[in-house]
Amino acid sequence: MGLTIAIVGRPNVGKSALFNRLAGRRLAIVHGQAGITRDWNEADAQLGHVSFRLIDTAGFEHAEAGSLSQRMTAQTMDAIARADLCLFLVDARDGVTAGDEIIAAALRRAGKPVILAANKCESRAVRDTIHEASSLGFGEPIALSAEHGQGLAELLDAIAPYASEDEIEAEEPDKPLKIAIVGRPNTGKSSLFNRLLGEARALTGPEAGITRDAIAAPWAIGGRQVLLHDTAGLRKRARVAGHEIEELSVAGTLNAIRFAACVIVLIDAGAPFEKQDLAIADLVAHEGRAVVFAVNKWDLVPNKQSKRKTLREDLDRLLPQLAGAPLVTLSALTGEGIEKLSEAILEADKAWNTHVPTAQLNRFLAGALERHPPPAISGRRVRIRYMTQAKTRPPGFALFGNQLKALPQSYLRYLQKGLREDFGLKGTPIRFVLRTSKNPFAKA
Ligand code: GDP
Image (cartoon, rainbow, N blue to C red; front, side, top):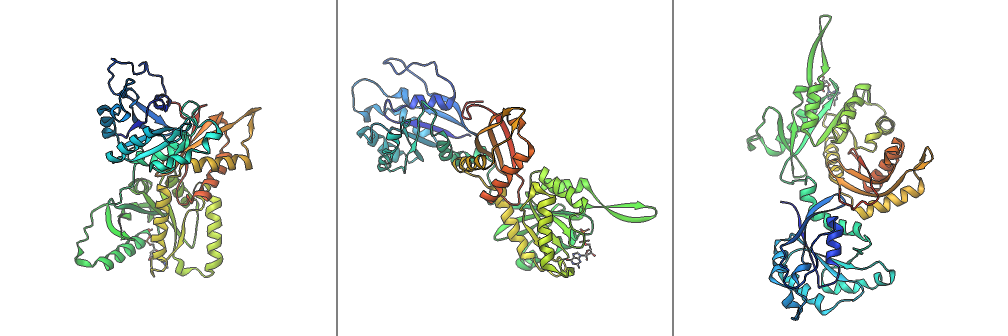
């Protein structure tokens, strides 16, 4: 079931205007004249990347005499009962009225989550007085103008958390975190696998009933259940001129990457970031997984400090699509550095699951555009108007504007870099979706 939102408020605050704005179309039904029986005034609506079912309660009040509490008909209360979330609309120009108080009391009784919005905020003067409405007990109101389409980004931010379970494949804390170790032959994948499992056994004891199946083995980090992909399938033996050599099994590697949420790319400290390492890392980025780089056989490295610095620089330069990703140096042989690996996995997983609020994104975008405007393409200006995060796992950002297809890759890289820095998106690929649209809130 999707998210259902009811717009609630006393007559004339602009419920229908907001309904039409969000549902993206004018409804053919005329306002509540006596005698017109209306069904639910309902529609599928969309705001930014979030879709929901919207119920307008405007038709349910009777224009004739009777106290407002009487006019809050059973149907309005039904609408509230059916909704997951109530959008409580007040008129910014009127201040808080007795009618608003009655509705506030009804909403409190209903016990549903409420987002308070002050409509008709197109003039600045009004905006400055709306905090008065916080006395209704639903926090600071969002300043809206349904008529002019203002304040919708803030409204989206308020709604998005309720939609996240439908819209965004939410992280299920009970589900184990799936991890795979990939890398060239001989980098030490099996050794690391066994080391990690050994630690798990040491923690849980041999009788704890660790069941290992063919694909995955359980483990835990920081209280979080983990399933570790068995790396044994990544070996492929090939015979070349009578010698048996080990090759990378590309199919096996791809299976492991697809199994995992977070991939450990294992690098040999003795020969870091070779062509095959880069190809594997690129595959991980392409598949959209969280990533941690683990440089193994660290016990053999003489100048650890300078080596670490070079590794960091090499990673960021050679793999710009994963720049800033956690880099851990360790030894599967001695166990040194293993605990840092757990931290890095959790960090990458967090970045992978990050959702940045729209208001923050657009502040970021304004700054980025100002520092470095997009280039003109054959005389035509590329305009980015608006940005919202359309998905997580990995984070994907929708850009709205004109001529976006002409936006050079270098400019997207620039935005990507800024997003990484400002919102800590390290250890995850970042995606962009380009949408040419004048009005990001228009229904597709
Ligand atoms: P895989 O092909 O990636 O699974 O690599 P293996 O786990 O089979 O390891 C390849 C070789 O590297 C073996 O001889 C290991 O003993 C050795 N090795 C693995 N990890 C380390 C380490 O941290 N330090 C050292 N010195 N040798 C290691």
